Length: 527
Image (cartoon, rainbow, N blue to C red; front, side):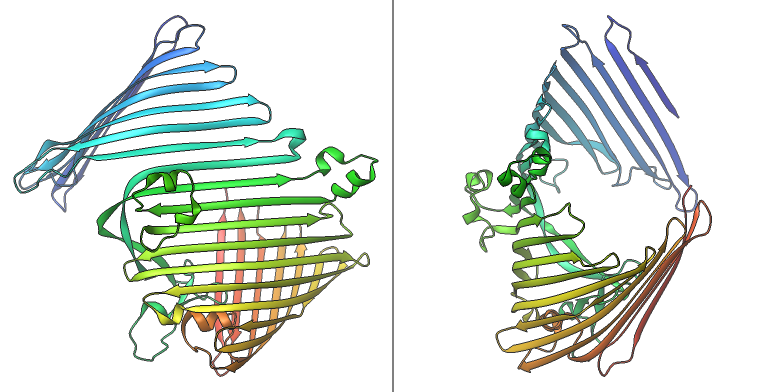
């Protein structure tokens, strides 16, 4: 059963109410359930609807009863929530504040008993100060107390938490400069995590199990990322433990985009004409869950205290810098990027850290109507350290060169040939990688598309390399030592206005191993 009512007449208080009731019965399990939910809201606008006091009411009652004993099961729950508040609206946005009072009940000895009370003070704002500047934020403080529901269940200690959120964007000068930021920090209780791999099949899997030691026992460090699509049959997941830790969680992201062409597109001044061909983007992302007792180290983004082996439960920092030259020119152009990554994750088996520093540059030129040339250069270092698994410890420096030529005899057909040469160096070994992939694509708009790829690769290792686990996978780009071949083919065909068929075939043959084939066929309908 469901009932709704609303009153929104001019000059009258605004009232809305919604009620829903759902009943269920399980004859096999001899159980029945009832769920009822009430939601109501009352607001009274003043001063031309600028000042709006309001009260919100919520109530939920979910009862699951055992048919034999007629007592409530432990999964039953109930709460009552009252939220008075006020909001002030102006042409520039809205500012508001509220108090949230919530009383919860849980089942003890087959009956509902009050279990906890929570009070949350909340202040928020959403301001649009101009057409190019907007920001919003929220500050909330919560206090939760628990009742002793029985002698066998002592009441937990009170919990206090806070949340601070601020985000916005600034886009002056016709969006030639775009600055976006978001900042959120909160105190919370979070569990430690344990790594697991779950077998799901190729439709969802991203990892493969390789029995390196031949004992037939699945071990965590024997899972590797899939080399070709649909090859993996496992997914990696992190299972929370029963114990909780008090941490301060922070997520912050800042990005700055500069595109002078938006304001100097038609200029005749030489230095402006030169600068309009350059565009840049800088992005910084920081995540941290810390047990640091000095909260201001987290709140004020003191990065020197982040990713600490003593205090950090999970931390990640990513810095990305991109520079684009002649981005709007179809005849030629170049891109340059730098990526800096630092991460630390404390798992139940032990801490794991990783670091990446990578420089990359690409250049392209259209030499004729049907011919395009491109070249990519990259240099970087990837490091990983694991307290539990030695096969996940590595430090690999990579230098790579990849020229490419693309030929389009007709607009629907495109053929690309790439030659990739890379040199990877670790502490005790060096790998020389050669890859020659050929890509073919044929497209008929809105009707069908066919793509194919074949790759021959050669990996020569000098020195003593760790021949198992993730370290060896990274050293050889997942190809393994020796000569290997990979091939893929995919196609989709629009059967009708609502039906589409998709075919994906992947294969590879590492040296000394039988070929591995995966095929996926899919029929989808969109109405």
